[in-house]
Length: 212
Image 1 (cartoon, rainbow, N blue to C red):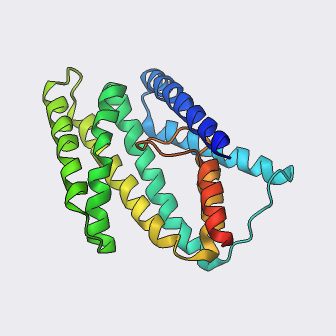
Image 2 (tube, rainbow, N blue to C red):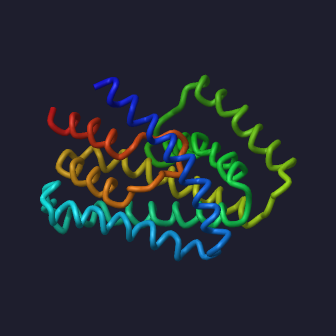
């Protein structure tokens, strides 16, 4: 299982690199981030629907209450990808992901504000070089563009607020399995966050927790 997980992470990084480069080329040719994002999510819907029709994966049976819990996460997730595509269309791929290195900062911030968690001094101290590095990179970036910068920052905010709300949602064991399935359905392409495993590794991890 360790070897399988390692292989999944390696494949994710390779697909991550390819996706970022190809997505930038697409955005140069078709500078419409909303349209690109729509096609990306539509591809996820197509493939998961195909899997259900071919019985490659059981169809979920969700109650209206479960849909209500998952829908806000879906909307936040969509906004995060829209903002990322907007940023990629305006600045260099490397600069977009340099800004997105701030995600741990927002993760800690929202954990404090929304979950009431208190980070350790070591965790807070580790954020100082991250924030300083992003500031320094922004001051010296040749392709700097305010729209690209704030779009990437907005992506940080939406993605990390999604992660915090996901943590609260996953406390409900009834919706864990369906949340992971939903995450898988709409994320067949690369995730734009700092190192996050493939949905398959999410599935293995949370399915194990769900069955305990």
